[in-house]
Image 1 (cartoon, helix red, strand yellow):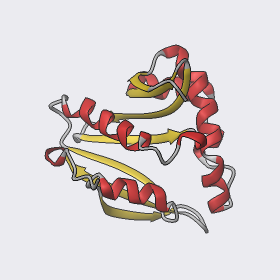
Image 2 (spheres, rainbow, N blue to C red):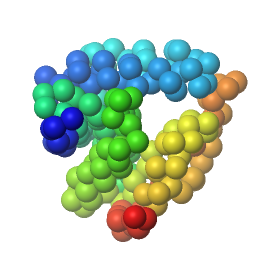
Image 3 (cartoon, helix red, strand yellow):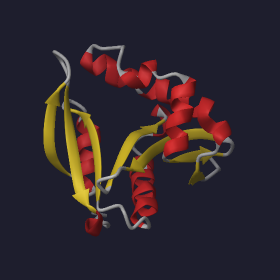
Image 4 (tube, helix red, strand yellow):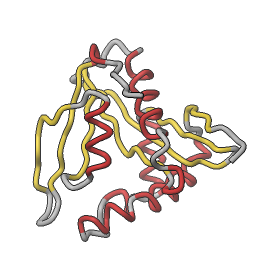
Length: 167
């Protein structure tokens, strides 16, 4: 590739790139669950812009191209809700998702209000579940949201930042 991937705060002008990447990345999830009407595939650009404005988002860039993103916000009960961790299919399985997850956790760890981190994924999304477990997340709830989809909510305390890697 010749270029390194850099992670930085998303800018307002990144919204369209993030939305296109989100649409690409969630195709496999839609196929896995047989549901192409999932929220990441139906979210509008205005909806994404509003979401970015009320929280914090990071992007990973390869040169000028946005190749990954994650976003989240801290709610009133001290939960940093991390959402839509996406990595371009050609960039997957190189540790980028883990780097982004660590970076957004580090960002929210500086906010005194953040007491825990929480995220969710579909019950059949084994790669996602494996990544989250490797970062110390444990399942805390399951909610059936459709005939083929159960969302698994995973959580870890803010004091549990850091993880053990195997070389």
